Image: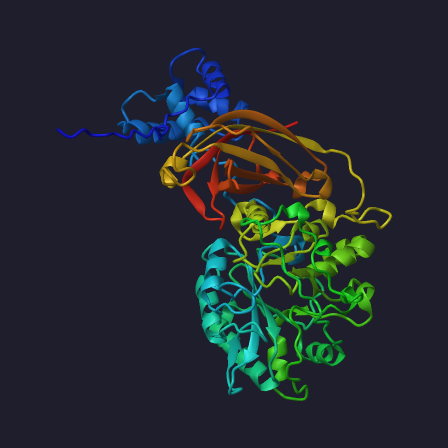
Amino acid sequence: MGSYRMCVCFTRKFKVTEAAPPTDVKDAFNKYAEGGLHMTAEQLHRFLIDVQGQGGATVEEAEVIVQQVLQKRHHMAKFRKHALTLDDFHHFLFSADLNPPIGDQVHHDMRAPLSHYFIYTGHNSYLTGNQLSSDCSDVPIIKALKRGVRVVELDIWPNSTKDDVHVLHGRTLTTPVELIKCLKSIKEHAFSASPYPVVITLEDHLTSDLQAKVAQMVTQTFGQMLFCPESECLKEFPTPEDLKYRIIISTKPPKEYLEAQRNKGKMNNSQKGKDSDDDVWGKEPGERTADQEDEKTDSDASENNQDDEDTDAFEPDLHSSEAPVYKRLIAIHAGKPKGGLKAALKVELDKVRRLSLSEQALEKATMSHGTDVVRFTQKNFLRIYPKGTRFNSSNYKPLIGWMHGAQMVAFNMQGYGRSLWLMHGMFRSNGGCGYVKKPEFLMNVDPDGQVFDPKAKLPVKKTLKVKVYMGDGWHLDFKQTHFDSYSPPDFYTRVGIAGVPDDEIMKKTKKKEDDWTPVWDEEFALPLTVPELALLRVEVHEYDMSEKDDFAGQTCLPVSELKPGIRAVPLFDRKGEKLNSVRLLMRFEFV
């Protein structure tokens, strides 16, 4: 009789155990349920006011929460006892739908001039991938508009037969898309996520007859939606409230465009810069300064800086009768006065304009003219765009623009990574409507005529205390073997601040070994000198001894919007899409 050999391999169990409520949750339940086993709506109402800082909460709202929790957890009919057990209470606190970390309503004053807002801005909005060879399409434009982006950029060029207009990234291998297709998609999706105006910035490389054709296309597509100012130059721009459901065109008027073409210096093509791409989710935003990366060798880059990828395109015939029609459609005039940066930042009493600077030009400008930039942006529009060497559609650090009042910090929306997470975080503010009112300090002028100086050393204004209790949902959103083939994951959380340089910091919890529902229970104090511009960064990683740690979710939240108390914080994937179930239980407190 043959003998059988058996090989038994031991692997650690993948069993998911439900984590018990943290001590703070138990203590709150005992306190507000007054030692009982159930918490009534009235008791929950007191908890919402005292602990969650919801001063305006009503007993009726607390009753609705109780009803929703009981129906979801116990499928209870309405006539049963209306009260929560400890587990029900914990379920409520850990529900991202019932207990989110920020609100979802527009709450900023929307009746200030448009230049008083940070505006969610895309760069080369038509590109599906890299800057050199990806397809041009209306699909990324639609996706951006659905996310709340309010400024869409189109590069417009003549087609090969010079009788129609294409959108493409000039002098690259990108395949074109017809302008009319992009315009129709903008019309259809402009206001699906927000009622506030959409600005189309045109990078114009056209002859005057094709500019006339564009004027006709734009007018016919948008009709009454188009905002055309009465006078050629506006002294002050209307408000987002006044411009609801309107489309605004911004480009260089034909005359300025022609002069820009004639005055253009030779671009220095010696740069062969490439951005570090060794970390799949991008460098720390704190490391992303243009001067550490490949600099333009042009010492005069900030002086000669033109809009985006400049062209030696066709010269419009200014005597053509068609030019004025096109010019009348331009509500925000772009362009750069002669005479270098100081002249470019001059504030004119009788007109509002838009200036575009590359990320490096901004950095140079802020080194020597920081307060001039702030003063310029109190009335005029400043658009910042990624340097030309970001072929892989990566992004830069947005905070330097925001610190100086730049309204349009233009990003490659397909350039996923930490910088884009910050952009997503900023524009979760104000109900995700794409317009965020600038903090007052950026708009103020003191009696001596001084404006905010971003270089000034400031005292700590407040400290945000963040407690990371626990996490859950990975076992529902990921395969058992996603993080580790033979054992449950070893998660840790990183929390910190992106903001002005003095506020930037990242801290991390200990790793929790072999646990799909990790409990960390660690608290961090984050001092803030400019809380108005601070973003709370949260990332979860899975420790991997042999290789790079695995990514397990992230979010970025505006500190100014954080609701105090114990909150459920939903996490997002690398691309900024919400994970179905993954969330953290955290506590926020300002001291």
